[in-house]
Each structure stands twice: as structure tokens, then as C-alpha cells.
Length: 326
Image 1 (cartoon, rainbow, N blue to C red):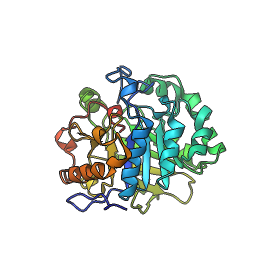
Image 2: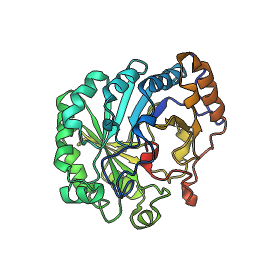
Image 3: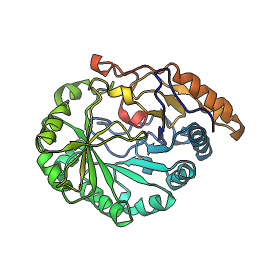
Image 4: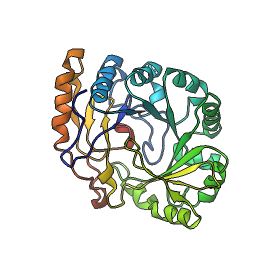
């Protein structure tokens, strides 16, 4: 095994978020309110052999968790092959999806080697779900969650972007939903990006208010594993489900950073809210380029900042979350 990926602040990177497309078929208000507007041809996205080379390099350097992201990753026809390639190299293969095709395809994904799945559900009210996502697909997504359990997933993570005056007051409804279901419901603070300043001002709400409510009701913070994402996870003896809070504006959020990102165009992003990314595509054209690829990543890590600058209103070069997989 090559040297573990590590930056100058001695953070080790066990977790890769791998975007396979920036295409999405939803029009979420906080991400793509006007729908997907193509800036890249599908043929320019990483090919399966290029993806396999990315995965091999990261697994050789200590990565043991890969999350497949988009856009919406199920828009790629070769998604099962991508999942299989990751499962051959790492112990945990996760995916984030809008759930649009989950009822139909989740069994195939599981057979290919998917071990964990995250589904975006921003409201449990069908009308509000349609208002936020731009798609009247609530029943379809719920059927997908049921099917995921049916094919053997023991826990499903559900992502809900916390939006003031839209779903921020719905904690009791969400808690009732997970009381007897093994769902980890994750409230994600709305994050400012280049294309949604006014929406951020109108709908941003700190997750601290949710955390205070949970702790007042007896929820307890769960210990974090080395390859876990950034969520603070809470459990309660009376609930089968869990609550996760992702609060990027909280002090010290970046201290436990353990993940790197590769975009669908083959760029290494050291931070979701960093610069334009470092192009690795030239090092993905042949299997024998792996030493040079690893060297490029290790060098880039030495310039990784200690933290983001969201608290200063600086979201870097990220125009919207779909552009590099959230």
C-alpha cells in the first residue's frame, strides 16, 4: 500500500466522494432551481476505466469508503458497473440519490455491491416536497425507500436540507416517521453557494436549534468512526431511527475532515467550498500512471486549507452543489 493520504494538519483521508455526473432530473430550490443546464457533454464525464483508476489510487492510499454522487448518479447507465468497481477495492460503498429510480433499480445496486444508501427527502408533505424539489415524486421516492429495506438494506440515511419557514418546524413529524424505522434522518444546514445568495438569506437556519430540541428530549450524541461523514449523530432508546446534524457553520467543523472529492470531469477538490479543482485527467489514461496520480494527489493535499470560509460569506468557486457532488 502507498502512503496514507494526509495533509499538513495531519488529517488522514479515508473517505472519497466520487461524482459520476453533474446531470440531475430534479430542480431543488437550494441547488438547481431552474433545472439542469448542460455545460458538459455526457461523453466528457469520467469513463468507467478512468473511474476504476481513481478508485485504485485512493484504495491504495488508505481510502476504505467511497460515496458515489452526482448530480443524480442513477442517470448513468453504467452505474452498476461503477458500484461493482468500487466494491472490489473498498469495504464501504455508499451512494446519494434523489430516489427517483430507486424502487426500480435498488436491488441491482445492492447486487453490484452497494452497502449504504442516502436518499434526499426534504419534506414528508407531498405538496411541500414538490415545491422544494420541483418534482411531484414523493410517493415514488417513498416506494424506493420501502424497496431498499425489502432488498436487504438494514439502515437508510435520509438527507433533508434544513429550510427556515419550509421544513424547519417539522421535527415532530420527522421524529414520528423514524420512531419505528431504522432510518438515520440527517438535517443538513443550508449552505451558501454562488447561485443562491437570496435563498440562503431567506431560508438559512442553524442546526443548533434542532440539536437543542433533541437534547432536551433525551437524545444522546453517538461516537464517531474514522471514516464517518461530518454528521453529529444522536440516538434515543425509544427510537429505532437516528438523527444526524450536519452544521458546516459551527466552529471546528473542518477539524475532523476526512474526505476528498473527485468531480465527474476528473478534478480533485480538496474542499466542497474551495477553488476550481486540480485536473487529474491526464493521469487517468493508463493503469501504469497510478504512481504519478498518487503523487499529484499527495502534493495537492499539502495546499489544503485548514478550513472553509463560509462564515465570511465565501463559498469558493462552487456555483451549486450538483457541480461537484455535494
